[in-house]
Length: 265
Image (cartoon, rainbow, N blue to C red; front, side, top):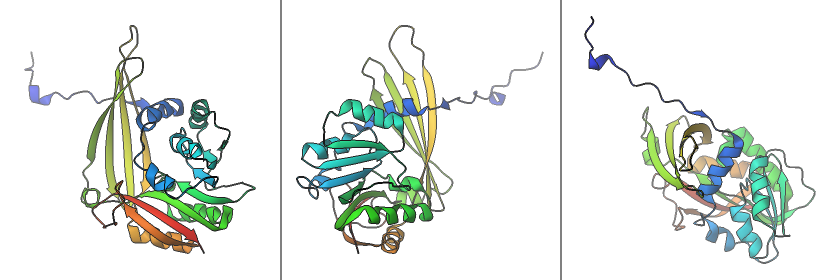
C-alpha cells in the first residue's frame, strides 16, 4: 500500500462560472447606486437646464442626480440590462435613455456638456478607439461646449506590480439576506490594466445555492501626458484637472483617479 504523502496533494482549482450581463448589472447596482463621491465635480459645472449627454450611464446613479438639479439628460449605455434597471429607477421626464455604442454616436442634437464618468473611457482600451470616441463627442458638443470625464491613471503601486497581482476584497449585502464577497484582481502590463472581478454569492434563503461567478475587464492604463495628447489630437484643450475625490492638484504616481474639464477648440 503506497504511503500517503501530504505534500503531494493539491487543492482542486476553484471554478468560477461566467457572469451574465443581467447578474453583472445587479451586482454593479448594489455596489454603485449609493456612490456619490464624484457628484460634486459634475454638479459644480452643470447648471439649471443645461443639455447633457452621459456616456456609459450604467444604472443611472449619476444622471438621476443631475436631472434632479434641472439638467436635460440624454444617457447612453451599450448594456440593455443596465438601461432597463435605470429606467425602473427613474421616472424623471428630463432623462432619455438610449442603447448606443459611444464609438458610434448617432444623435441629432448638440449638447452643452458631455460627461464620461468613472473610468468609462478607459474601457475602450486602445488609443485609436478613444480618439474615435473623442472626435465624435466633439461633433455633438455646442461651440462653447465642454467635456467632463474621470480617467483611471496607473499610480506607482500599479506600475510596480510587475508579474504580481493586486488583490482587493469587498462584502456586499443582499437585500433578501446573505452576502456577496467580491474579489478584485488587478494586473498591469504595457499600458493596460486587467481587472478580474470574482463574486462569491452566499444567500441565506432556504433552498438557495451558493454561486461563484467572474468576468474580466480590460482598461487603458495610459499616463497623464498620453491622455493630454489624445484630447489635444481630438480637438480639445484641457481647462482644469484634479486628482482623486478631494479634487486636489494631480501629481503623477500618487493617484489613480484623474478628473478633467476640457473644451473643444
